[in-house]
Amino acid sequence: MKKHILIFAFVVALMISLGVSLYVKTNLGINNSTLPVITSTLTINNMSSSLIKTPIIQHIHGEFAANFADDRILLGGSHNVFVAKIIKQIGNKTQGSTPKTQFEAEVISNIKGHLQGKVIVDQFGGYRDGILYVFIEDIPVVSDAPGAGYLLQPGSTYLLATRSKADDDWHVVNSFPNVTTLISQNQNLTTTQLKTLSENNPKARQLLQAYPNEILLNIDISRNNTRNSYQSLSPGEKAQIQARIASFTPSPQTPTSTPPVAPPPPAPSSTTTSTAN
Image (cartoon, rainbow, N blue to C red; front, side):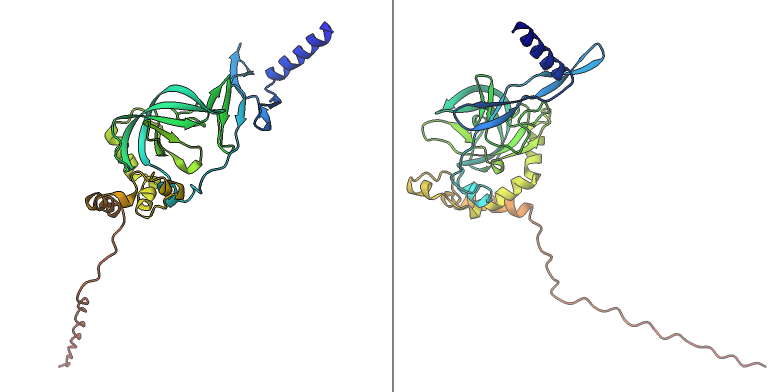
């Protein structure tokens, strides 16, 4: 028996040294799934081998309250839409059986709402008991690159569409892809530089244009929970939004009041006749 165990351990070690991907199956009470063991490279004596680096990843499947792929619905279903730089992770909480991760962020600019200074961003997903729980299957969930991976990355700046409760000041980011947009991975940019980037970001402009045409969620209307809706803005605030939209919308060329004057026809060429003497 001991001999068999030693042989099995040797085979596993050999597979790892050759960079062979291992797969395991587990039931975590949510869904059965095949979970890859992620590997990274370690150099020993100028030779490359693969060692297990990251924890198991578990995908959680759920349904969204609305089609947030539509920017008008995304704006209507969000209480705040803003650009913020993630400063650091500050916590891990669990809502029911769902892990959530909290970050401190610095607000750069607003599309919907009037946030300022530092806020707490609460992202669905995160680590629990060494397992990374994620809601999206079509993006890299683990990455060492700045701004990459499933979780928000400290030092990177994002465009975020969030909701919040009346009894706390956390800004909740759900896992729908349209909710989060990476603005910059450069952690050395100043606030002024990040604000300029966000103002010129195509997605940020797209959401600003959608704001006046937002579609509010029926459940929010019934509960009087439509915070920062476009219709609730004062005339002056609406004018500011429209001015921002007009600033990056090319204005059509205005036709001249009178048609251009046609140039005069060329003068006829003169002909000189000479008579031989």
